[in-house]
Length: 167
Image 1 (cartoon, one colour):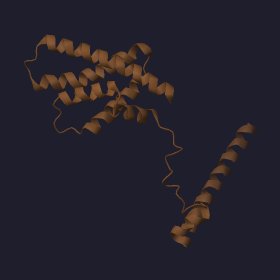
Image 2 (image 1 turned 60 degrees about the horizontal axis):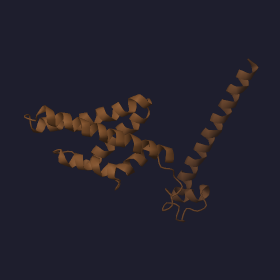
Image 3 (image 1 turned 90 degrees about the vertical axis):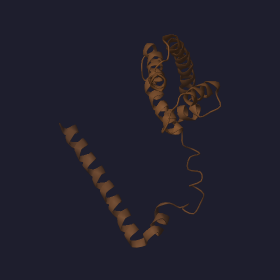
Image 4 (image 1 turned 30 degrees about the vertical axis):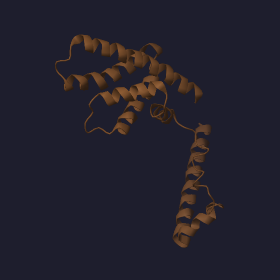
């Protein structure tokens, strides 16, 4: 019980210190304007803004998106497939971002589910749009397309695991 009280006291003290620091910052900004930055950071005029992302680590999602935009054969194969499907009124970079998000989600799945999650995403992305383009597509074409998508999903999973292991 005594520990719990002292823990609460410590948290209240930490909160009060944070509020005081925020109030001091606000007062300094009101008093000094933009020059208040010099009070808190010594190298305001330096090139810190240009070097901002040098020490930043790339997230898994950023790595996946960079891969999808790269000259990697698997990424090119995916983008070619996107180009072959008539995607009117859809920004390709937004589509790649959405695919990257779905691919990142699939990495959280179990090993057995990863492949099927990516395959299902690709089938939903391409097959439905191809069916809407031409209703007379034959089942053989659809079956071949699904096999191609399955192979692409397998290659994507292997590449994603490689990217995650590098991060």
